Length: 504
Image (cartoon, rainbow, N blue to C red; front, side, top):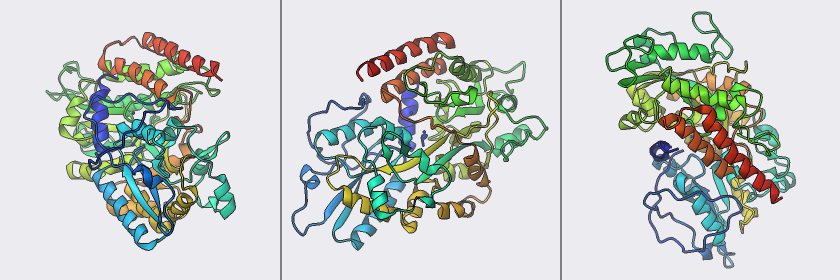
């Protein structure tokens, strides 16, 4: 959409993935890797995970140079900043690659797939070795922010070709427009958040399903908000003896089912946007002040602490390990009643459908009185240091022709940003999953956040790491004093911001 307990979770997510997505990670074929000096990157480079280093297939240095006369230009497409890395998705990329290369003489394309947890190090290494890829896709707002100064403004190409930007849905173009950078990508995918729920668990508990219409009340006539969500989630949270979380006999240390699994994969407290007037981007809108010690953010993390440790509707860090003994994601385990997450979870729906009946519901009203569907959005970007930008743009335009774009958006499990393709989304998805209300995803677009939670901020990766560590203290039970945890994190983040701006 991505803490100490989260090490296990991150590896599992990587092995299966959205986010925010959400993001699969598959090791590429092992080949000899070019040895280059590690750069002093403009953007922070993530610490290497303590896992065996996967070796990825990188374009040889000579291939980045201008081709000899009569030879086609090779356009390298870097995949790893988002979805697109599962074996099935890689196979679709291979089919697209073969189709393009068999029908074009002057340009050839090659997809380079990198595991998600290796994306920052590998991309930095390629830049340092003067081997920048020509296109990076799919990539979300957060991925763009990780290398914010690296991407080329596409405005000159759009203007020169008179490219029709009106073809894209609603505000999707605005997501990839940056006042100080220009247009960094064409809208490809949007992934609104909805409530995904296990109908079988609701039926077994005799509990009514969440409403499907945004703003509609719950079945009992009461407001569909997070208070109501907690109320019904308690009825879905069971111990090994079948007692729910409302029962005096309930044993929270011996649970086998949880009514709710929070927002996304509980990464960077982006859901704080639901608790006040500020956005979910962790720092103020002018990027100079940390928001972590504000009441809005304290309230947000307190809600999660209560959900795990007081209400017992959400698995703690230790308890969540049970999910991954059964499946690659929490709901896939069959042990979770509801999960508010981005629609890129479609990648797991086929396996869910084999195990239980599921459906989609509307996002509840937040404590701030607003309904906010957090949204992820994928695009492509072209690195400034690409040696073949004109040819890369030609490849991009081919990708955005309807046939290819439909193949790509189907591959990524997303709602297409193209108006024509979006119009057929519900029908196409209903054909695949006839018992799921896909209109909920379309309707969620009317409730997306006004400023994307993944948007750029100074010291992007370092700040994410601080917040991930803070949230991990809560989920692990290491420190349940939310004010103390957030105050300490706020101090760290503010120091990072002050240092950053002092150098400007």
